[in-house]
Picture 1 (spheres, rainbow over the protein chains, first blue to last red):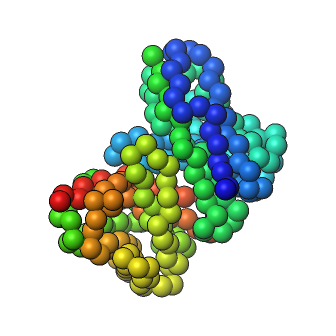
Picture 2 (cartoon, chains in turn blue, yellow):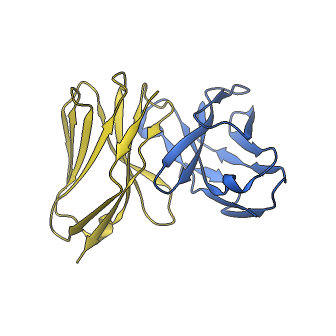
Picture 3 (cartoon, each protein chain N blue to C red):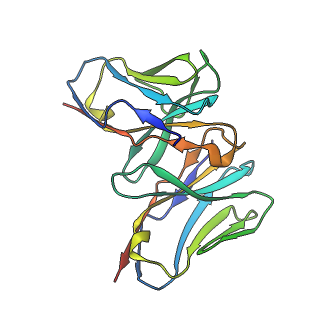
Length: 112
Length: 111
């Protein structure tokens, strides 16, 4: 069963902490994405990567960075967590086909 | 930039048809999608339509695309309680590339 796995389902972090959200896919997909989901706003793209060591900013990259050192792993980093980064974070990967776009189950991050 | 909009909420009686609407602004959108998210779950692709099509049917689902008006709709026939979920429309320029999502429509199916 193909999978996108996010390391944590729930996280609580303090303001100012550096936070790492990990995402691993086992489908050998080239493309990987980080979205955040907020009620009424849908999913907004933070960063994406179309290849190893490649990254591009999405629509809301401020306060975030990413790392893609290996094809299967795409990490989202909150350099200094703030309360407005409390959200659900969804990772996805794709093969380049419409039916190959797969989402992880999400990480609900609360920054206190 | 791209913008995708949906109404926030839809209530429907079990057995009726549901119609969820979506508008988008980018005329270069190539693929338009409908995703479903059930409580506590990730996103599940329901169906997609290529921009040169105006209709696609898949069992209980019918997608209509009016490219001139940049309007997309999803019709669910014989709506069941298991169809209660949030439905997102999304667009992309190429298959498998980044998606731009609408805000989601919460569908509540009443018995």
